[in-house]
Length: 258
Image (tube, helix red, strand yellow):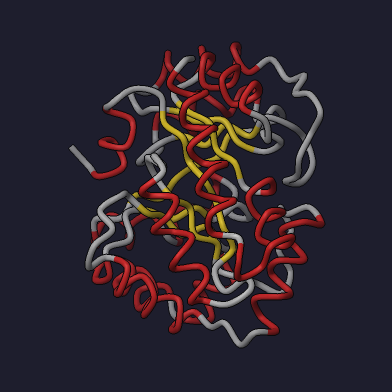
């Protein structure tokens, strides 16, 4: 069983996201440890990029803060190396193709494997172009995680059949961000995924409250939350650790009840 599969083995999963280096990497490391201790089943680590096209204003601003603080891919790799001394929760990187290309795809992915990263999410790579990365990921034992969106429609089955790790169900059209309600027919999307794949699927984009997390986890295998956590970090900065820990605990408790 892969590490990512283990994240879903104990029931519904809660998956938090943070932008590495916001406000600094020392705080990021403390937040990751706190999230792991508070019940996170899998943690998404965002590698900042100057043009994060899938992100709304909250995460865009976090990218700017992280890059302004001097965050680099190599520094993030070093942070993960240190975290892996005691953090056993599966971790995946979420970033953009340009970050991987400019570092060198093979060098980037092989380093991910060396430091204990379990998977890679590249939201700007369509299914049709994943062959640029997927064979390298497979060679080094990393899961390239596919996203399906409400607009994927007849492609959902194809994407699901060839996906790795887990399937990221994008709940809403547009960019990431907190939404008051999610109106997409998630149930229909999940049904189609399950007819074509045995992989777990988790819902992200727009989830911020325990009620939303419980509802989305009831329809799928887990809930992914980014902007609401990044907002807490924007609000409290280096003092955000206990606030994020409490939030993750509340969200995990809600997901357990799904």
